[in-house]
Structures are given as C-alpha cells and as structure tokens.
Image 1 (cartoon, rainbow, N blue to C red):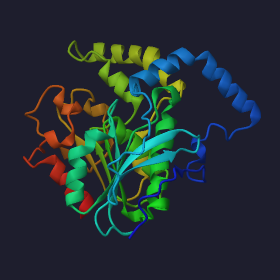
Image 2 (tube, helix red, strand yellow):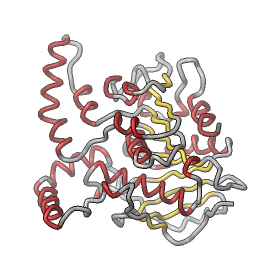
Image 3 (cartoon, rainbow, N blue to C red):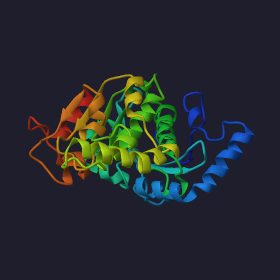
Amino acid sequence: MVNNINGDPFKALWNEKNTQLNPEQNSLLLRIATKIKNFIFYIPNTIIATCLNPRSETRFTAFSENSENVFFKKIITPDQVPLTAKVSMIEGSDKNTPTVILFNSLSTPFSVHRRLTEELSKKNCNVVAFDYRGLGSTWRAADFVVDGDSIYQYATQELGINKDKVHFYGLSLGGAIAAQVKALHPEATGKYVGDRAFKSIFSLITEKCCIEKLGRVIKKITSFISSIFIAYPVYLLNWEFDGKKALANMKGERRIIYHPHDYLVPYNASLASVSDDVISLDRNQKGPITHFAPIEYQLTEDNQKSIDVVAEFFAD
C-alpha cells in the first residue's frame, strides 16, 4: 500500500528541477527590480490574471467525507501558497499503480473532472485533482506551473508513486500547464494527454484575433496588429507557455486531442499543430461545446467515446 491519508499539509520545495520558476532565486538587485516592475504593471498583470484565472482561492476545510480511498489534501507550494487537492485511491494501491494528475481548464474547479475520475477509477487508476491558486496569488504564467509541480511532488513523495507511473491530463489551459510541468521532469516517463490545449498564448491571440474572411492580406495585417498591441505585451509580462518546447522536452507516450471546429483554439494555435500523436474529435459537432465541454461529451472522429479512449490510454 502507498501512503494516503496524512492530516498534515504537504509542503513542496524548490529543487533543481523547478528552481527556474523561483522568482526569489536571483540577486537582491534583480528581485528589487522585479518588484518594481510588478508594481508598475500591476493593472495589466491583474487584467491578464483575471482572464486566465478569475476564480478565488479554494479554501481548504477538513471535509467529513474523507475516507481511506477518497480524501482532500492541503498542499503548500514552495512560494507558500495553499492548494486544495482531491485524491482518489483505488483499493490496494501501490507504488506501481497508474496515478493521473488532472489539470483544470479556464476558471473551472476540479469537479469538472468528476466523470473522468470515475472512469479512471474503474480502470484501476489513482486520481489527484486540484484547484490552482486564487486570483490574488497569480502574477505570471509560471505560478500555474509551480502549482502543478507541487502536486507532482506530492504524488511522488508522499503518495510514493513511481515516477514512470505518474500521468498528466490537462483540458484547454490545463493541457498547456500540464505540458510545462511534465517537461520539467525528464525522469517522469509517464503518459500525457493534452485535451484541446493551445501551444502558446501568443499564437492563440494572433490566430484568434485575426480576420480571415476578408482574405489572406487582411488576415496578415490584423494578425500583425494583434501581435503588436496584445500578444507581445502579454509575452513581455511573462504570461506565456511554450508548448512546442515542452513537447520536445517531455518523455513518455502522449496524445493530443484536437477538435476540427474548436470554438476557441484554431488549429495553428493548438498543441496538435506541433505533434503527430493527435486524436481528432467528431467534426460534425460545432459551437462552444467543441472546446468548453468536458471530455465525456466528446466523440472521436471514428465515433468512440473520448473519455473511454483516454481512460484506457492511461490504464494500459
């Protein structure tokens, strides 16, 4: 049996794998300069943070439904931000039991993965779902990665799961964050699924804000304008995920889920555009559901239930 219920919070640490995410690692002068920059750009940073993570912090409480196999865990990130995770363990779980970390989409709580958690449990997988830090604690894209890395530390250290048995699933924004976390850990040779994820915020802005219907020239002009006035400022404020680089650095099997009519993420901005391991969804489906609906509402192009395909991929 692996370790499971422990009433004390798990405290993640800075280490050689995540130290690049530590805003305090630089010299005193650089730290002062960073604080000045954050003060000057407080308003634009807050606007971006609100767009990506408008939820308030999830307050941890000692839930009465804690049991040996399903329980809630308080996790403290290396920069001292509390997170709440829901841990679902199968009966007789050991260090070789597949354990899937679930990363949420924009502005959703971990309950968005309820059905997927149930299916993974049926396939004898442990599941760790969690909420990102709240709006007031989010100041850069790397903050999300610190959160995900803290959950990975918990799964491998306190739960004691072997690193090749820790898998990653992320929906939309969660897919982008999960890719960054997995890329930090070349020893993490478990599996990865990026579900309708974008490859970078920069490409998402330039592809989504351009006007295609008026021809190629207008598309290029509007894309250029959006890059100058929106995408580059967002990038310079450290709000970016490099999905292409993350895929190149991660180890282990992976699947990228893409919808041909994705309501939010055009193909050229998607993680699917830089990967060969793509699962395409039903092109007959259109509208907001193509991006925002959880995986249980999606069919693959060959009419399989996507939730079953993903659960079997992680359990195999």
